[in-house]
Amino acid sequence: MNAPQDALVRGEGITRAFHRRGGLFSRGTPMLALRGVDIAVKRGEAVGVVGESGCGKSTLGRVMLRLLPPTDGRVLFEGEDLATLPAARLRALRRRMQLVFQDPYGSLDPRRTVGAQIADGMVIHGLATGAEAAERVPALLRQVGLDPDHAKRLPHEFSGGQRQRIAVARALSTQPDFIVADEPVSALDVSIQAQVVNLLADLRAELGLALMFISHDLHVVRHLCDRVVVMYLGRVMEEGSAAEIFRAPAHPYTRALLAATPSLRHRGAAAAPLAGEVPSIARPPSGCVFRTRCAFAQPRCAEAVPTLESLPGAGARRIACHRAAELP
Ligand SMILES: Nc1ncnc2c1ncn2[C@@H]1O[C@H](COP(=O)(O)OP(=O)(O)OP(=O)(O)O)[C@@H](O)[C@H]1O
Figure (cartoon, helix red, strand yellow):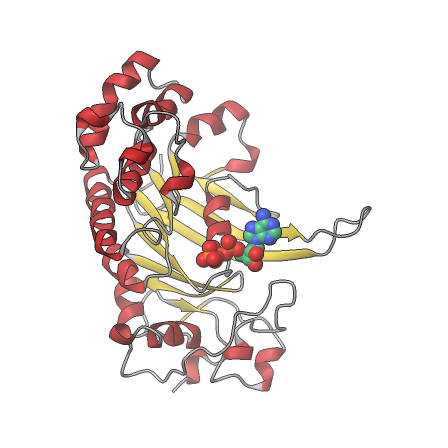
């Protein structure tokens, strides 16, 4: 059994390649969606993963759940390497790791009752017989703030926010310790996003869940998360406590992301707003991948990849920037 301060789930040096379709006999050029990412989520901790579209957030979430194998690196759950576990042990761990998707429409079967879909996981993972699982459904519906008598309804009889609550109930049904929530509220009306975020916050506190929360919405991340990992083009640019990062963003990319959100703009740190698009992962810049959009880039930034290092005097914060110590 691990000490409580140890990571529940840890990704070490995670690299994930995708192959572009080549000709008939070619697998094409590999594109790296993740490059040497280290990330740890402690028991009961909420870690926010932020960054622009295409930076590898969803890929990282799927690798952490072993829904995608890493091309290089490893994922440890309670210290056990998921790649080398016997199949039976991996099956047993799977019930403890769940995913909540962005799109509650796409992730629910429109033809089956929500009760049946919430019950599935319990039966698949051998936690209950079909009848026992059906009996537990009303309590799960109640736990996510839905009417326990609505188990026999079909997904289309619920609103978008309610459907996302159903997806959360389904994830909770197997009593997980770790949930990856991939943009869980971005498909919902703004007016109901806060309700679903608050539900996740309450459940995390109540059940001691570890949460990897993937989001574009920095406000939500600030509200919900203990720690933040800032990604850019498959690499971690900055990592630290949410309080520290939102108080004083250090990496030029984090500063620019916050500067793009007026209410989070940090008055003390110099930042230039982000211009242009994220480069393609098929042709990443040499050296620091952010340098082509960085207001502080110098020629040396093109030469070597900066490693993620502790920032002197900045607590547990780490940033990957050649100019970390001399930024204005
Ligand atoms: N199955 C796949 N095949 C090929 N390329 C992929 C695949 N999945 C993701 N990618 C590529 O990997 C990169 C990272 O994608 P990913 O979805 O992880 O980013 P993201 O940060 O979650 O973006 P978004 O916020 O838009 O969901 C992108 O360039 C994407 O096109």
